[in-house]
Image (cartoon, rainbow, N blue to C red):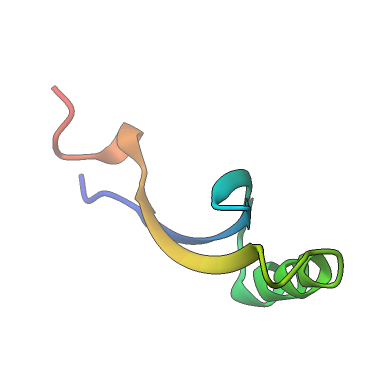
Length: 66
């Protein structure tokens, strides 16, 4: 059976070099909107946010399962 691959978007917030939050979204637009919201409350000289695309394979349909 061919594995299902889903694209998810992860928003990561870093404060003073320490990752403090990660949230997962099903679409890029929602992730980017959340990132913009987080940026309004952060200290740009010390903090950072980022949006990352992640492809997730459904383990239940993976060919690697025995």
